[in-house]
Image (cartoon, rainbow, N blue to C red; front, top):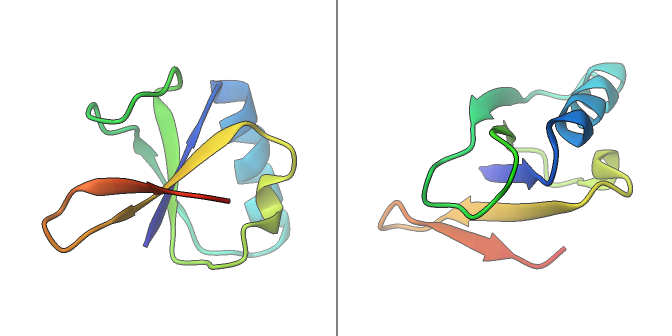
Length: 74
């Protein structure tokens, strides 16, 4: 499971549109408070192909065994 946090809500909504166009599974969730991001909306997906992000400024996280979100490099 990957959590994609965006720099702005506009970028998050654009990414959601791309996911819909590609018929990918995802869920829009509030960005967890422990993550440092300026946007309150994130996308949760199990899709390993992150090409739908495009040029949006994002941070991508995975949840570790302890339940903590860890940022991964793009």
